[in-house]
Image 1 (cartoon, rainbow, N blue to C red):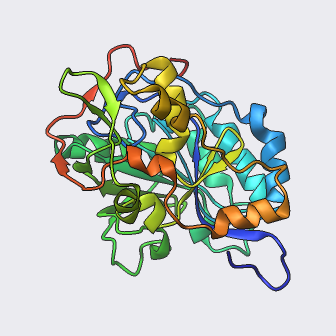
Image 2: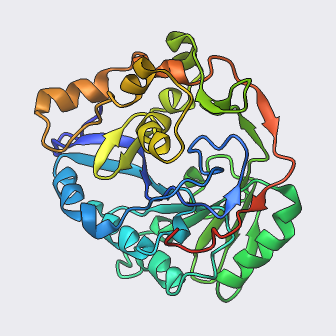
Length: 316
């Protein structure tokens, strides 16, 4: 990975902090399996020391906090504060947009990064990204965004020069900016690729049995080299990090050998040697667990995205 001449830490251009399995929506073929009754979330305080150690070894460039629905994590503001302080970088919270106005002090926490540093451009603020999966919810989503923002709220076309820092929009279809230069961008993803978890002919939850090389070749995680912080460890792949936990909650219809395989993946630990860390980031070949993801993509239209019954509690 790249390094600045004056900074020996390894640079990770794209990092996601996955902080909860809990979601209040059911989007079929969610690649983090949050469309099932998948429980469990992470307190910032439980992993703060690990992240502090990591901050001495790696630099982060583009940072996203997501889930599940990250605004259902009761320590979401601690995550924002902690990452800001350790890496001195803005973060994006990637949300489904349904709870923007349900988290006390969210606006102030998102707005604070950069506000005390007038020499920084306003484009360096924390910001919100909304992933909208049902086009029928667009109007309601936009109203929630306008309610969340303050002062004069302007709808900004993504290619408008007045849009704050276009480099962070990454193809979003919509953006809103308010009087404080607070920014909310909206991506409309109404189609998903088929996920790793599927159903067999008996209707049981299972995994694919694919050609690992072909699955890796079409993998978005591999293509865009997106790394994942989960429970203080670093993964290259979101699904492989979640297979064991999902299997404990919803036993998969897989054999003993495959169950051993999903539990054998070793994430990168902060106490690993310099050589192990370097090898982890420089190795871009398929892993055996790639067999569990599809080796061909079927695009599936999300005809409806519904709320889960009983999934409104952040502690589910």
